[in-house]
Length: 359
Image (tube, rainbow, N blue to C red; front, side, top):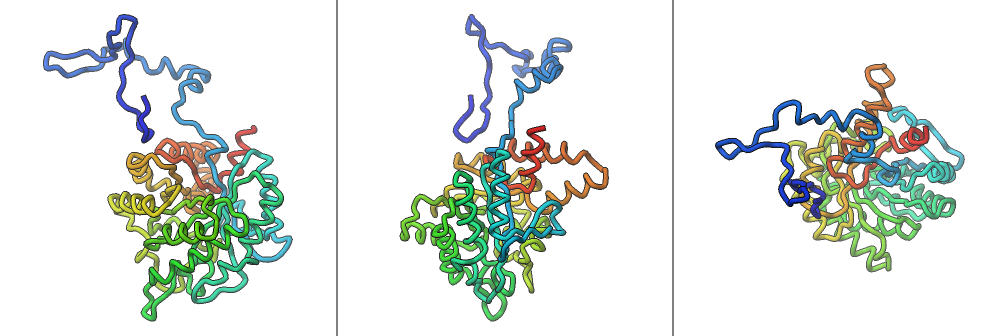
């Protein structure tokens, strides 16, 4: 029987007479030991592809994946991103064209990251109604109305210093003054037509601030997918080059989580749920599968995981070097994230997965 948290509970099958069908036998001490060979033969159920397919416990589908893309100002722009093989900087019209193809291949959801043509100390270009993200939302929703469009909400791509919030004179990131700016950015995305907003900044109270701003403006139906458990990870390197969002001084350890902590992850998830988050997220995914599982056990709420740029880049580099089968390893990595408890996986592998699925 599957319980509400998605955890499989211990079970025994019963025969016609109601007795338990055991694969173990009791000992004199009351313990159970496996039945002796050859009565236990797990390989029987692995012998053929049909049996393996019928009995597979975890499955991937296009409904499990959300594809991150990077949008820039201009028109007709499709510029390769050196740090992320196969990914591009896209102008809004090019993003809409990508969206058409992605949906035709079976893709269901995108998340947009923006690179503005100007930056300032407070990241105000992120709320510009004519910014690249806002324009891309409108063009994508016009071209592919049934494709879900989510947006990353953060200041780091829009601040001149590269941090995710407003800076104090001594370089500290100020929490509360940042909340209004994040809420303003999220509201501008909703006004442009975004189906979902996803704050990634890790400021305390940001979910509540965004939820209040959306509800007050009549966007109570727009869900918030919170980067609830976001670690200060070394695996973000390629993304920071792609998004041009590396901090110009210091680092983000003052607001992103310490990689050694897991109890703190549970606290962050609980706080975001209390503030109104509709979906929780763990980021990165692969190095933090234990955390993902912990959050899965803690809550029955929808749970996302972000297979981040460094995870993707390592798979591609190892595949290009002939060190492993890229396709097999990529699919295995996604399956592991799903098996650990993710309902939704943000991954740069999404278009390739759709192509592999057709082959």
